[in-house]
Length: 177
Image 1 (cartoon, helix red, strand yellow):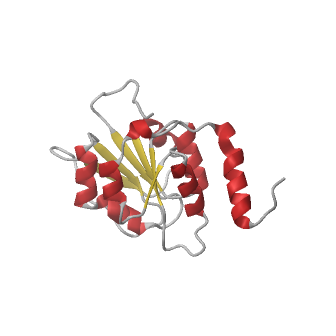
Image 2: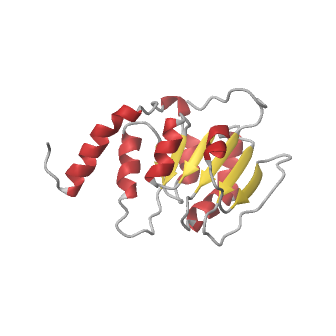
């Protein structure tokens, strides 16, 4: 998973997306020196952050001897960013998760623990248990990056939704069909 084809072989992009929400804890975490150092140590060269409605502004840098960092709030489509990414770090929205997995990109899902009744964590944890992605919190992101072995991830097959739906139905208390 996640092998880049074509283009500059030395450019390895990490794309971070928070969707349309405010998830400053994730933006702060990826902007921290310890997370940027962990990404750089794994061979990534560029960090592009889609920061949504957040108010925290990451630190831009050119990346001479470290990670190059850039950010934006919204885009009409993040598909091009996802396609060019070597690694995606995303909020736990199902649209972002499944769009990334369909493209075969390695994914770390960061759960927003500040949301009440956070049903999104259930999906992320189930897909992590199935080895389709890594799941982290803003506080554990650096360790997840340091420990990740992308070769251990299994490709996601869109036809694999039934077990996930059954798990969600079971969680919600619906009877099996």
